[in-house]
Image (cartoon, rainbow, N blue to C red; front, side, top):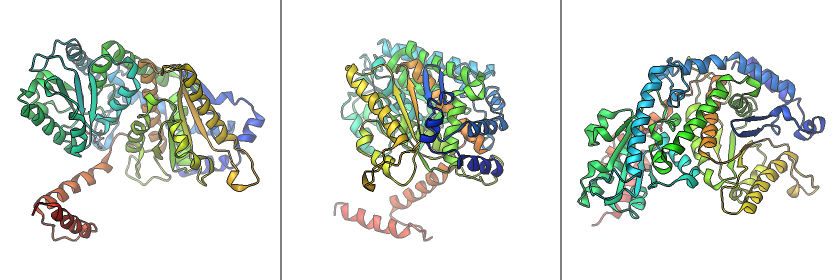
Length: 515
Ligand code: F6P
């Protein structure tokens, strides 16, 4: 967005008054409340008046969001810096490009068949015993979406137990394997590129664990990848290699076969409902007018807070134990997508891009970081996510949970004056409340798709490419160099800023080695 538009939005925002004043003039602010696909979205406690809202909508109109979504669905090269299409709409049948949709459909059928065989005890590995445990080995987009969705779908899981291992720290896999039996365990190696160091290192150790137990490993390995050739070469049977495609970004890949572990947990019917919920949200976002469009209004509010009002972080607080991994999923989705400093054409951005996305569940976080949210000098917008229908066994506990959510939104917005400064709540702190009717597969799908589209909308407003992630490359390359130096014990002659630290580490490590 150009600087004049940002300046003008900032100028309007300085005159809108406090939330208390806005509510005094318009007690419901219902024009900031949307309902779509079973999600009740209340943006009324954001720092927005009618004039600012209209200007935000004009900003959205100026970047022609409808054509951008259309381009995405048509298979156009939307991700210019990687020369790739951005095809997650095709994964759930919402794209116009039929070739992409057919490819995705075929792989979903293969995934359903394999999952049904595992769940039904037809696929028994090489030991003749049914598979009781599945370990998903993946990282980033090949982990965070499945982890989040698996936890959120706890009440629907009736298949093998699912475990997730991501970290190259061997403690992660050790910890997981310590409770499993090799003869009844299957590993899903989830990696788009099939080159990721962490995943391949864990996969190698997992295979060794099987072989050391005398198990013929191939039948216990499934790959989920856009590089099937590499997976087969590595040792995965072709029939157990599920494909996705270079046009699916890792953080947008949950609706691809990357969701295989979730599929094995909840089965074809419920995973299908999750995709159906995504499709329903896609249709809403592709068709609704801007002011009623959940992903557009959500994206505008995040953009307002981060790029216009320059608030550096957003706290995501799900009031739901089952949604506890939503903040980490959104952290990657938003920060890897929109943490950029240049526009699509390489010119520098004029405003902050992605906020720091962080958070944890309510009510736990009320006893951890809410002190700062209420009384710290920085204003940190909060995104509350709640569920109307109880997800636990005690309906009154659920009511208490939601009472806390609503109370926190009220306290942040209204505050409470106290002449003693340390007891004063300034209030006027913005928040959004998203309430799902129920935490069902369909509603979860709608929520995830809403966030995917909001993320893209924010990127278009920022003028950046949300679909590449060059910022993760440098660290990966340097880690390889450093690992080579540490393994040989010989540091390169070139003195880097971390050279003294590496020297110290080598000395400290030497002291630990047996004499
Ligand atoms: O962190 C960088 C990244 O490339 C993410 O975008 C991706 O989700 C993750 O690594 C895992 O990559 P892969 O699925 O290729 O193993």
